[in-house]
Length: 526
Image (cartoon, rainbow, N blue to C red; front, side, top):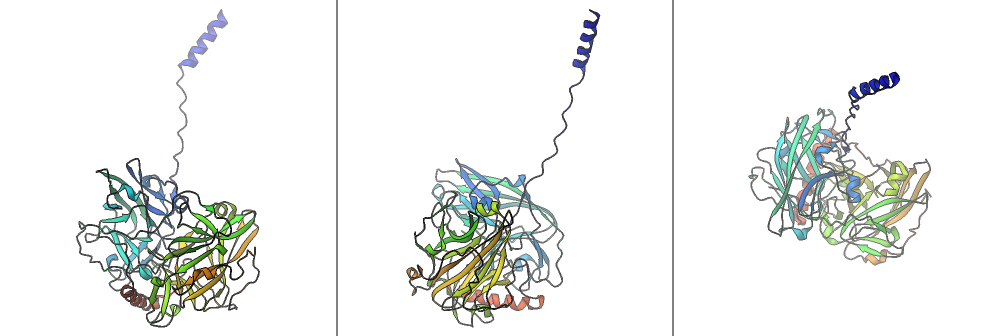
């Protein structure tokens, strides 16, 4: 009995002890989202409810839902500082010489504005309205779109005279866009998305974006921000008065074609197709331990990966422009060139490149090297990029010795300006090389066929030339060979500080020519 009493006392004592408090869980760090190539504003309509999220480049490529802006940290490590150039073109950024900071340097892509999740059939006017309700921070913020050779179209801004709203086309992705800040520190941007629904009501949502701008330090020798691996000879800009009241009805931005978010399949070999309009990408896939270069065709839904031999890209005469003086890599003054721009235009094929196929993102490591080994065609071919301030960067030029090469970072989706000096059939011998996660080298070489001009029969591009996979560096060269300097890529500067003014003057001249020769819808806001 005595022992039982002692046990009872011990049990009661243990029961009386306070319950142990579990250790507090360590706070989970917010996921970081890179703005390069991301859908920084991604609007979708689900069961009548509107949402506004962020999708990084991988999520956008896969068509998956993004994250709430307040749940993520926006990566600012790829930003770059520069000074506002002289002239009227970028006067909305401040006084000439004033230091500004760009959210991305463009080497991996500029942010996009996405409304693919809003069916056009559900809206009254086929548009989505984006409004900047408030901007809290130490300085001003501006968002502008790139047009011909980087010419800006101011979309949103915190300055009193800047537009506070813009309309995006429903069921489309629009861009690229450049986000600029003129002071370091934390900026909080509250943005509202709204849609007028055909059922008679308006759906809306609001989110706050937090962007921490680092100290803005501009190198004394640096020209405006580095040209991007996403660039354009985009659309001739409309002249926009900075004093227009922000209450004016925002104008509609150009609507690119998009495919559904379903995972793309691979088309059967021999299913030939001429593509003259819409979005396509060239990129590698990893199959049974080997690289295979294919074309991702986004002009169909769902998207399809096609063999290179089964695709001819057609460049029609609506892509022609006249070359102004001073743009030597495009030709002589007054020459006609056919130009496929970085920003999508209706009626013109929009080719890009990517390293986003799941087999590549999961099965390789490091950069993919894109090598141009030769060009067979009637004229000169050039691929160049445009930066946030319109600075051009030539990546490939058939007038220079081959081979020429650039490095493409993992998970990259980019576009550039493709220029051709003469009508006819062009065959570009392209090679893409990388390393598997196990360290094994992989490579493939194919021919990309492009039919330029209305007088060129695109069907004549099928079956000509060797378009088989080489599986490696086979020494195939084009119509030139040698060891000349390679184009500069990534964040390297294209011009010296002393030459920046001359380049911008040349760009301005080209914009005037483009504006007179071509008409197209431009990303604008009022």
